[in-house]
Amino acid sequence: MFAQCYARLSTGQWSQIELERRFDQHVLACVLSRALEEIEAGEATATEATGLSRAELRDVLARSFPAIPINAFALEEEVSEPESDMEEELLRGLLLAHARPGDPASARFAKIIARRAMHNDHLWQDLGLFNRTDLGRLLASHFPRLAAGNTQHMKWKKYFYRKLCEAEGFSLCSAPSCRECNDFESCFGPEEGESCLARIKNGIASDKEPLSSVV
Image (cartoon, rainbow, N blue to C red):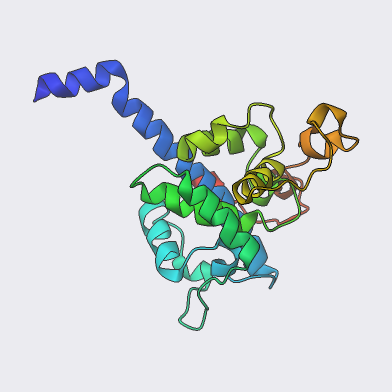
């Protein structure tokens, strides 16, 4: 038994699993920080902000953030379960179809990403992440086949909708190729901007400590 444990440690198997777990926790902390902002601003409930059910949110908080008061997310019985429109359902379905088989975390991130993608910023900003690199790592980890297809580094929202169109057998783009498109920057331009946590640090979004600081 000890020999098996040593073999795992020497190959880095456990350390890689731990790194993935910590990164997942970091992403959840960023998403929940955004959710708290929207709750406090009266813009959304916790379920509306995350796309997760009350039970799923309680499980996330209990497992990953036991020190965070659960009542901060106002998960009372009168809080409705998340409802989604057709656009969100299609995107969630695309993500679930490419999620790691049998992985509850991947299924949970599919719901979160689909909900946050309905916002108007770059997707990494919608999720409260530090940058596009964080988003790419998340997608490569939980939706590897889908992420691997974005070989031209298209903006992630644009890429998702292209995949949805392809699945239905049509294209919304009239250009014969991306190189000949007059709106190239719209799909492939840099996804720059200030992260939510940077705005918090600068005192614009909130004067409270971000949830991700506990990770």
